[in-house]
Amino acid sequence: MANFVYERVIAVKRVMVCLLALIIGLGLTGCNGGEPPANEGQGSRKTITIGVMPDVESIPFIMAQKNGYFEQQGVEVKILHFKSAKDRDSALQSGQLDGVITDVLAVVFSNEGGTDLKIISRNDGDIKLMAGKDSGIETITGLKRRSIGLSSNTIMEYTADKMLESAGLKSEDVKKTVIPPLPTRLEMLQGGRIDAAILPEPLAGLGVKNGARVLASTDQMANKAGAIAFTAKSLQQNPEEIKAVFRAYNQAVEYLKAEPVSSYADYIIEVQSFPAALKDSLELPAYQPAEAPDPAIVADVVEWMQAKNLITDSYEYQDLVDVEILR
Image 1 (cartoon, one colour):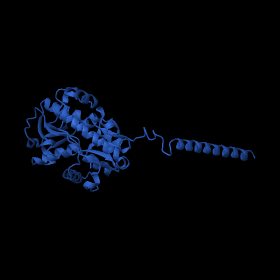
Image 2 (image 1 turned 60 degrees about the vertical axis):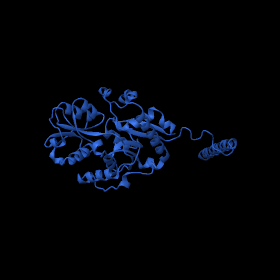
Image 3 (image 1 turned 120 degrees about the vertical axis):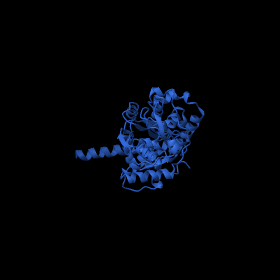
């Protein structure tokens, strides 16, 4: 009997709660003429989270945030800074990021590993193959049987191989020394512990400032495999927000074209954790509006990865690139 009474009391309470919710709902509808409240949805916009590295490729995003371009375009963006590609990619795989400043190789690896990632645009930044100031190496051909500091199975090794190939050398003609941390690689080059190294900007510029000799650059060869990519999930769920991100990116590109580097160098060096020694010699690329990557470069990267048995699947351009966002 006690259980029966208890259940009836609970049932009555549930009915009362439902009636109260219905009355409140009807009241709100009546006050607004059948329309939702004026502030409904405010503060609920999707925040697009982008992972960046301490490189020059990320600077348009940094400046877009600083100058309020994302807000102007109606999108909320959170930029997360990473010190290593490994940490960035781990955050991507765990669903913490919508987009990343990355490269074609990393995108292929991501898809191979089960994270559906799509390239939206190429990015701007130079990678240089450099000889140490006391190495006596004047040209790429002088690298034969000499040591080159790099990171294996990355855009750095891909780029180095292509530069060697341009001079008629094979990958096995040189001694590849694996040095993943970029500052350590630069330090070993400057200390004469390796004969040459491949480095991205801005560390490459610091190497030149300290006497290193540039043997080749991606700017000269037009084969930079950098990329700006977003997850397929985010592209499906937030296409308008991501379009707004790239409108803001293009605004930042125009700003960077018009303003002298000196006007924002201190900010960039602080936010991107660049060496303070770069303050007087920071050189940035000629940034261009966002555009889809060259199909020839994407195909070449996939072919290189297949030749090294780094991937098992075959990837076509449309498997890796989303061409709709920038239209």
